[in-house]
Length: 281
Image 1 (spheres, helix red, strand yellow):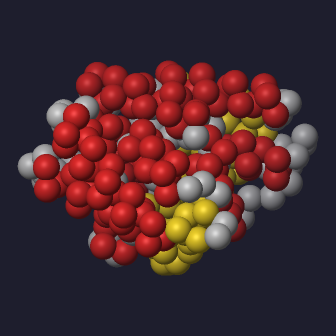
Image 2 (cartoon, one colour):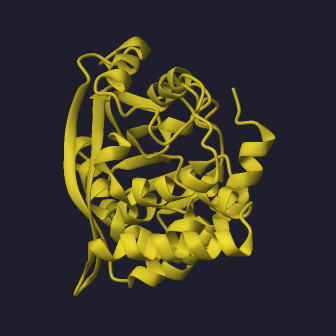
């Protein structure tokens, strides 16, 4: 089951901004990447799959960890995201990572190819999470590890809630349909865990990761970044009049300054890390 053309078009349009803000985004979500590395038990020499890699993270960070004897493949259904990942790998001189356009439920790899598979903030947008997990299990070696990072509730993540609450005052929010692709699709504890069990993962685990989303930018710079990196926010902002856009910017800056520090922006954050391993057979 592939994402529809409208979804691919929207994320294609956002890809340029993810690439533009690549280093700041890498910094913000580095604790999440490390949690996935820890729970998937990724180490030197391994072969790792990063599903929904976007413009290359955490695949690029993992490539540095596994070293020249290891290999990392990042896949994403959005062509411009993959192009961004390839450009970054070339700039960094990383020869042990490659990027391919592919859907989570139709991975172009042979059975038992990878030692581990990870996905950071990707599975919430899979058309069929169950099929995606089963496909990831297919390409894992026996006892291979897999780990997912998903957002906890929006109330515990002001990184999301500050701007969304402001926009909701001006643009009537449309609640997503039950289980529709959405950033908070798996915010409820146990929901993704049950899907891993249904997919055939024996004894999957779930833990809450509390961390700080930190970015060495001003509130003004962060306001721009936040509006650009979210395809849903970007779409809503495009519908506003110049007066409304100015009002959103004013309100957002005032709200974001509460999270401003001497070193930049710092937001409390919570995500769920859900992980497991393929069976021996």
